[in-house]
Every structure is written in structure tokens, then in C-alpha cells.
Image (cartoon, rainbow, N blue to C red; front, side, top):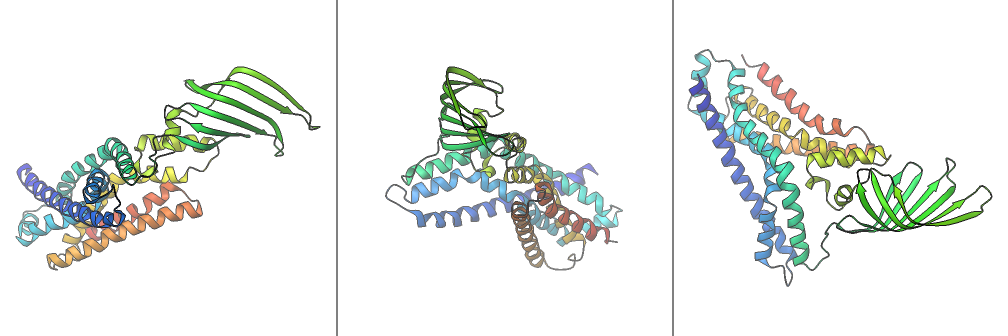
Length: 355
């Protein structure tokens, strides 16, 4: 039985790998053609092609779920066309046993997607964007921030400049009362990160404002500022959420939420990445339902057409629920889980009807 399970797994995994390579190749070609519209003096076809190649990890990550769906349809479809699935069913194997065998190679794609999202994309994609920006003569984001604002309780903090090394320059603090009246203003020339939750501010000027509007000023050569803000968090601001690793996404989103700031976009991207493995497995379940369910008697070409539409539908539903979460401010977890739940329930329902 293990040899049969291995045979099914290898057949399906091979089909998934071939589909992944084909889809990735098509994506590279069309992306390269799209980049030709941006050609400039120092950004020619060679540089455009290099940029597209540098974005391969992100493209690979985005293609895994759809490849699992279409590859599952192709692999199982080949077994069905040779009547091998019919023989397995006649030998007493249940549909769910075969589905379990198909899920096993999909786990390799799941592990690969997790590793790519955590370790590869956060490094490769910012480098790709910096390469293109430099070739086009645009400013390259190197982790430097200008005019960045933060909120801590009733205090608003403005940082005129944050260097790539994490040093703060020109930090202003505006503290307000519960009634929204400015009661304290401080300015520090520079801030250095010392240790966890602690910054050392230099050349601090403080202005206290009493209820009568009188201002009392004093100067300090240095003082300690307690804050959960870290240089690592400041660097994340310059990077698009989709390029960040799930662990860093969650830490930064949790920090923003703790400060009473909007973190929906970061939580949404975090849950999409965390639930991506389940999305891949749900795509495989849908592929199995196409083979054993209502489409078992149609041709391979028609199954592929339905599979492509199912993959596009999943992607559009995922995008729509994500935008709806940002606009209407409902749970990012719910927005990320809804399309996956829809696919899982649809696949289970179709397979449960198989006799």
C-alpha cells in the first residue's frame, strides 16, 4: 500500500511542479514585457530582465496555491484517464484515502511557501526594488525616514529624521491633556537606542504649559525615553507589508495596535501569510473534488478550464475580502479566512457526495 501511495504522490507532485514552472515562466515573460514600458537610459532590456529575475521568489510564492490546484487536477486527471483511480476504488480504497495521499506531496509545497515567505522574500524583494529604483535614477529607500510620526497615549512624537542605523534626529514630543489641550512640549536633538524599551535623548528642551497658559522652560543634557519603539520597527515602515516576514509583521502590527494606531493592513497581510498553507491544501481539496465529484466524466481540458476559473475566483475573493476589511474595518483574520473556508467547504461538500 505504501508503494501505491508513493506512486500517487509522485505523480501529483510532478504535475504540480511542472505546472508551477510553466506558470512561473509565463509570469516572467509577461512581467518582462510590462517592464519594457519603463525603459530609460540606464534601464534597458537587460536591467529589466534582471529585475524580473530578482522578483522570482515573490512570484513563486504567489503561484504555489494555484499550481497546487491545477497540478492536482492534471496529476489526478492522468491517473483517471488511465483508469488507475477506477482500479483503486474497485480494490476497496476510499476517496478520502486517495485524497490523503494527494495531500502529502502538497505538504512539500506548504513547507516551501513558509520558508520563502519567512526567509527569502523579505530579503530578495527590497533588493529588487532598490535595484530598479537605482537604475531608473530614483531615490533608493535605504531604511532612512523623514518626518515620521508616532502616538503613545496622549503624546504625539515627531521624528524629523531616522537614519538607517536607527538614530533619531530632531525629536519633538507634544503631550495633550484629556481635553485635548497642549500641556507639554519637548524637543531633543538626537536619540540613541540603548536597550529594550529605552532610548537616550540628547540636548533636550522642555516647555511646560500650565492652565493659565504660562510656559516654564528647562534644558537637560540628556534624559531617558521609555518606548516600545525599536530601530527594527522603524525600518519596517519603509517596506511594503507584503514583503515582510510573518514574524516581523505580527510584532509590528501588535506594537501599532498597542499604541492605538491602525494596524489592519499589517494584520491582514500577516493572516494571509499564516493561512497560506491552509489555502494551498484547500486548493488541492478542490482539485480532488473536480476529479471525483461532478466533473469526473468530463475531459481533461474542461477540468483545467474549471480549475483556472476556480483559482482566479479564489484570488479575486481573497482580494475583495481584504479590501473590504480595510474599508469597513472588520477582522483581518475573518477577511483572510473566508475565501479559504469557502474552498474547504465546497471541496468537502463535493467529495461527500461521491458514492
